[in-house]
Length: 268
Image (cartoon, rainbow, N blue to C red; front, side):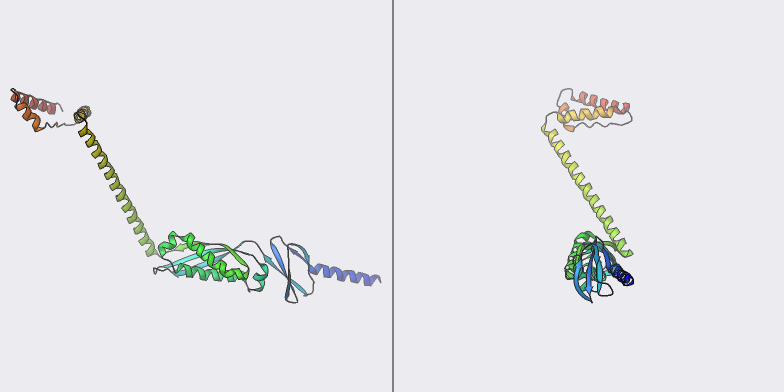
């Protein structure tokens, strides 16, 4: 009797040990009984029928990534480029992910690869380079809608690298240089325009204010007199000389002005 009881205890222990399963916090366990789906086990210490009656398939529910290998794509404007991307996805429904598709990870990667080639082939190179986030969002929407029946959720798709041919790189470099030169010319022209407007405003104020031009002339002469290495030419309007000619001693005044100018030149 003792031997039978010991044998039964050993059998029960073996059944217990072979039927014990531990489902991690980030996993779910699908139970197939004689190959037919029965239930989904949550995380924790679980027991299934051993000896091939029940089989548990564990599914990782965490966010995962899959790399899309480098693809050679021809853009809408007939430029051949190499582009790669990364897809972020998670299993939203473990039952669909296991029962409705053979390999959900490979299927998601292949569909994302096809979507990448399709979307990039419909845009021009400038659009791809300047609106990369928008194109990535469009690929994400396409892949997410296609994989939803598989129980897969795709929160994001990122285009990582866009490799251009060497000749195209040179063309883009020349285009960027020409754009910088254009901006430089425009900036210089705007500066000259503002300077001319300021000069026009200054001349208008000097003309409207009596004696302002004379004071400005005296200030200029004072600034020039501090540097003895400069030669100053002081121009006297012809009308002033003719006004002196009308006076009795106009000729003497003209001679005096001429001598003063000559003395100034000699001193300089």
